[in-house]
Image (tube, rainbow, N blue to C red; front, side):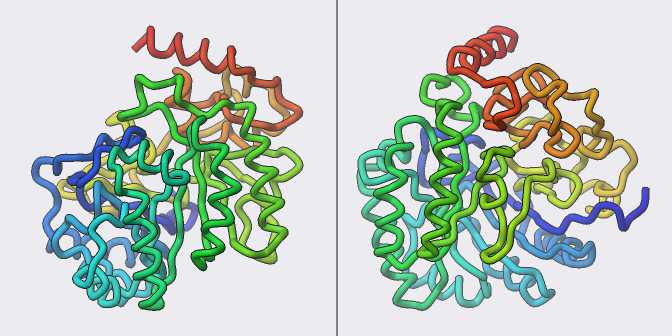
Length: 363
């Protein structure tokens, strides 16, 4: 394999599965730490490997990152090697100790999960004071001059909160907002009735484009939002630029690492089927460049597309969209029920639920 063809430029790294919340939509079913999670010393070694392979950006996740003792040392190792690092937190534990760690870690920003206005956010987080804690975290980080990003997970019930959330985030001085659709995995695997109605995806892309044009906050669509409607060029680009979806990058430019050292193309692929190797047994380079790994993307051809994605005239470019969204909503890695491309067969709510029903009956 040509080692210049694929490079893990972006990494999402789960340091621990330990968490202080039991969120209704958690894809990894966080709570207790995994058995035999990587030690700090092991993680420092992995950090060096990531830098050596040309990684540009690492996002640290949990569980709850602040519950992993020594996380800031791992971040600092990456930062000192020229890698941009941020983390995603529920912010419930944020205090003076965490602020000191953040500053030592040299994070580019702190990502905070906010999943709606107060009622909806607290409902999804299963804690009645969670929203209040997020607001306090905004104030603390702003006082300390630490950049904040907000990450929102969308289901059907919090969709209507997008507009008031937009106004709230501007009021709080937030400059960066990413939203993503909740997939039916983990804690949501048996709650398909709560999932976002696919008919609303085009409304989300319209919302993102309109609010971006106001230039009050930069909004990014997650990889499972789109694709190729009239708003596509404005969903994922850097401010002042345009770009379009070019297919799932898991195993091409993106790598995921879990807390025991398992390597996947993406941490959103919450299934052991996607594990390509373990860092206690092989180096990251060996796993990344091993022949046959990440075959769902590296060996992709349009004949793999199935169902409503088969024969789509954007298939060679889109490649079925987000691989996780495909896998967890159908029994195929190559059919996406959330696509809003006007040239593709429209996906009705009934079609969506019927396909999910078939999936769950099969599994």
